[in-house]
Length: 180
Image 1 (cartoon, helix red, strand yellow):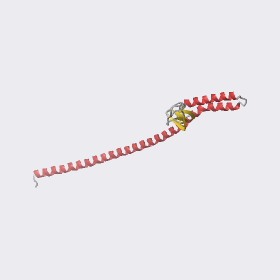
Image 2 (cartoon, helix red, strand yellow):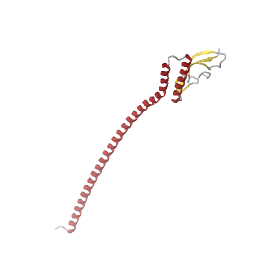
Image 3 (cartoon, helix red, strand yellow):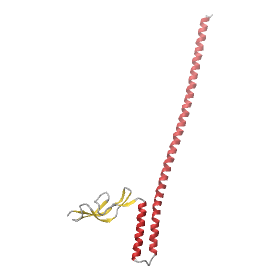
Image 4 (cartoon, helix red, strand yellow):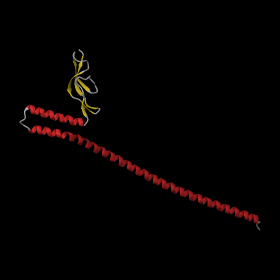
């Protein structure tokens, strides 16, 4: 017959084994739950990243389209400024019995209207005649020996230069004085 103390020890050992098995089963269940949560979180992050990528692509395409539309309409606004000038040229050509003086006055008015349209766009003439030669704004076509003008002074403007705000569109073609 087994000693009661031995029976008690065996029962205690069995209950400890059962507790260990229960704890290990609970640990496995917890690990499986954690794995499922991590997998779900990963899937959500992938979905979010894909949506952000799609939003960014749409933004890039929309920005490019808006820039193209802006360029097209910017040109349209500039063209609108020159339509009245064209209208006045057409009116001048319709008057066949105008004197030379009337024609000259009409062309001067149209020229003024054209310059006003350019000014509204921010285009301005480059100062040339009488100014010191500046290779950033002037293109020297000829160096002319002169005693009456200081060296490197623009003595004649052959073609007017223009700039748009601070950017040179076309340099002025000039003759520049030099010492003999």
